[in-house]
Image (cartoon, rainbow, N blue to C red; front, side, top):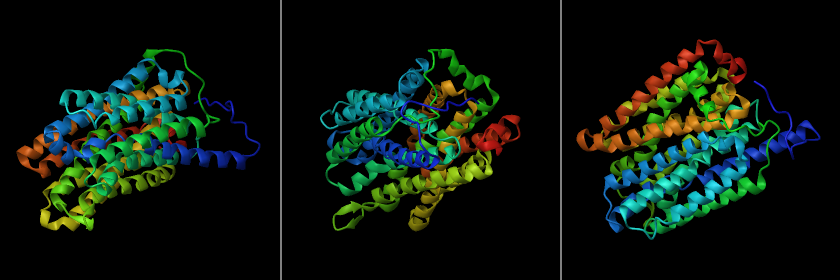
Length: 419
């Protein structure tokens, strides 16, 4: 693959200086992503309050989450169709999108009308489509060696950002508005940090020409197609687990404060599930750089799918065991995510790297709408065991695709030839 060797504002006097700049960029982009994505599950974290104060049902809350997913798909497809992720500077796109998502999130406080709330959450998701993929592209412009670790750090930040409303909810037990305000202002801060404190990297691809047909390469190229199937299998499980693990933990733990009347235990444990995933993501990146992306993603999908199969069948009386299994699930369900994205950056033409990342991500999130909707339907009909077990279908399909890619010549383009 061709590489750009210089970019405006990134001429370094020494290798040591460039290394420091990479570390600084990785830290800021990770924090900006954490803050920018904090509005994603804001309504999930306060679902009980929304049901009590706005008269919503559990099904209504599910639709608020699905609206974010569908909005994200709309945003990513629109960006991909216009090649906006490769035509507009990624840091600028991130800034505009993070501020837009945070502003729309604030409207959850005053509005009680369900259709309007769904529309607001759809718009929030559409703006988030300009947050996550551009952040990955920014890091890809700074890293060639170690890209899997760098994107793993960013996905770890995404994980913490997605789980942060649960932390806010555990702290502001009786003040759901504070959760909305806090997540929105974090998004504003993340957008500003990306625009002001980050510069373009030395491997940043030049602006591309508008060419919508470039998206089709994701289907016509064998290596990218198998990576996409692996990613879709991973996504079928991931966001449904993230969306409903809080409700499941509330059933298992019940209402139980940690300190006096504050720090709700179920919400705190749910955030911990996200936290272990955030820690595991960069570690999986290190492992993938040494053992290959196809092998590591396959192993992690086997483990996460295994947790999905039996966690919901464990009796509530075994709450400590359920928490342990949930933590293992939280670590394995997300830590392979960055490796699919990294594989796409290694297989895609440099000049359309952002478009490929955005389109792949949009397709993945389109699939999540189905699994997020399905889980509460199955839980109501057959219980949490069946509802979570159905998510294991994704890791099975994804693992088969990545093991197939591992046997093909295209795997030599991944992780420095390690597959």
